[in-house]
Image 1 (cartoon, rainbow, N blue to C red):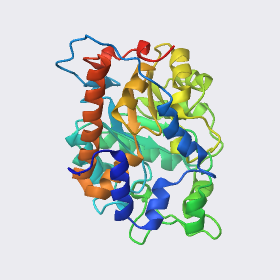
Image 2: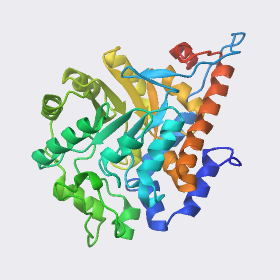
Image 3: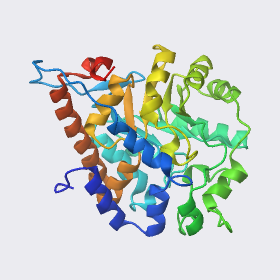
Image 4: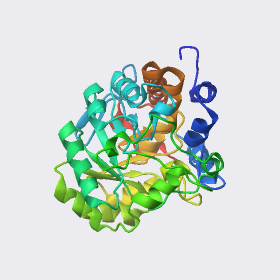
Length: 358
């Protein structure tokens, strides 16, 4: 890690470290993968109108999310199946996030049980939730998550069915022997089936996850837990408003990393409209395509509380386990720190919308 200069170099190292099937699973987008590319390219179109002659001899990068202090406004997005990248899987990833002083979101589709992950954490852990057709199994999982010590539920709402990821279809994606969805063993839903003509994960979603969800699901979740609920997977301002009206504490602007609807907009392009529509009601966070520390400033200037990184964390995990994840986050922190200095921003509160071109 010490010889790598940026995330692009880290990506190349990670690709060489994992199997082709695992790489295709992590890297792929839906259909023609245009949204995957759009997410990344859109950040380049946002320019920073930097300030000069501001005292930036000291920079303070820390912030809060849902009242929880983190060392920087960069945190770890939920991604599935970490043991495809490294034997220590989610345990290495959560420890690396803790080393960086930041928040970790654990996926429902993790290869490690939530209790083990929280026990290994030194920072806050949120839990990303898929709602199953079996509401009793979903409720049991929510109660486990709460008992384990997670600080929030992040309900993913953009996956009534799994997007068609053609690389996974070609590979007939399924987990290797010995790996499963550890959080769903008790319900009997830990196994990803082999599927003829499609990916096993797509078959799993079609069979077990609930495509009939409506906004009532947010109220149902709030009725069975005391944890704050974050709604993840929004690209529309009116949907963000509905989420807050249903009692969500915040939203994550996300298109699932370009893995669901290939025609969806880049997340940074829709962020300002969502921020403006909410007008301070609930916290707004974002993921999707971020690759440089300066991108974090762009998101904050447009109103995001924090950004989440997904694939780059998997690259760090594949390249070096815990140290790789911590190193990746340290790399982004260094870039953010320099960009803040060059923008005339001594702290996160000074990153305001006037830095963006009118």
